[in-house]
Length: 93
Image 1 (cartoon, rainbow, N blue to C red):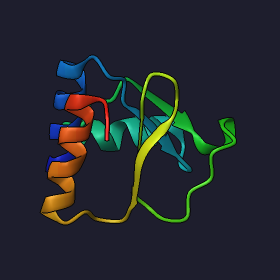
Image 2: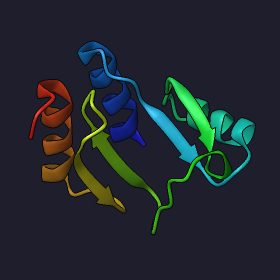
Image 3: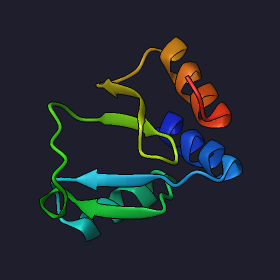
Image 4: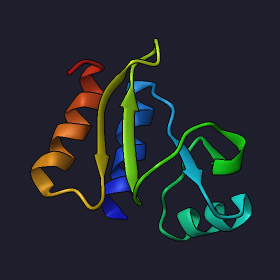
């Protein structure tokens, strides 16, 4: 969870929005994220979106035109964490 807390801070600095999409109850997810100091812009229940994921966590980075720049499933190795943060900061692959 420390990586996701940092990701949210980097995204805010870059002017990017972070959305948590969850199969759980929205309020339960918000409480869980808050307890780990991960303060996302929005929480959306999976049933409210056509998005489907094959594993948790799934991280998808999109640009302003909603083009997927990268996607990862599961816990990231530190080199991938750094890649994700650079991608969010630069806005391009």
